[in-house]
Length: 319
Ligand code: GLN
Picture 1 (spheres, rainbow, N blue to C red):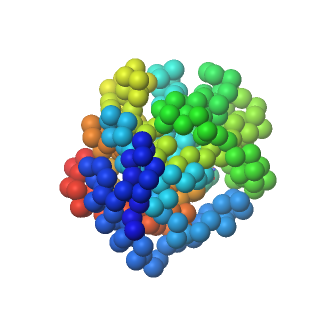
Picture 2: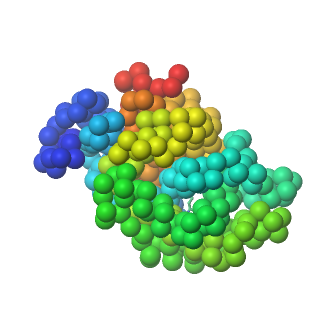
């Protein structure tokens, strides 16, 4: 039986919430999906995840959250944290970040080195690894604890103080982190990284290792649907900045599949190689899906399919 529930009542209650019936239908359809992709293999601790796991949550502006499947199961957030890092840097430092990173889709894999050389160490956007390293570097300079600030934002906005780093995942990634180290050193050679590269990498791997559930992430992303307003009504971002982050999610949030994601889902979204994807229906709600099997571009196969069904069944999209 589908287990759609609101966060105030953890008991299984099918069809709860405005989109409860839609979520139940998506869960049933997703269960029938044969092709699931494979978990990220390059971070050994993620490689063993079961591609048949699936969860999906919707958070509404009043803080109600409900979902289906494994929607309360913590998973490795990975690149989803790049959105929260960017939001923090924009809130603390405004436009300055755009001196070191662009705002164009890369058309290349998330960990690609190829554009960096002929574009003089300035990454295309904040959501590929190179760009995220520039953002985390700036957040580290501004706060002294980039990963800690991202964890704090996630805890505050989700209301879940248990959200935390997973040191074993950070260590697993660090042990296989040559590609990210290469990106960081290369950008440092152009003067585009301020902190010592080992310190930056440690902060970045800690950030990526944060575990949170679909419920947590749907709630935590609420400010993106609320024009920059946080759960307590204060502004993390201006209305204009919230628009900007959503625009970059739409054009760059799923790497070299961003065009296909916009075509299928029609919402700002951000994926991570842990198999999660957050998506924003501006002014209305935020979504998070999780299923660890990835396509060759690093996006969750069942996650994209579920979001595709959500916007198709509800008619909600930014278009
Ligand atoms: N930690 C991962 C990496 O740097 C994040 C990538 C991702 O989620 N796309 O490779």
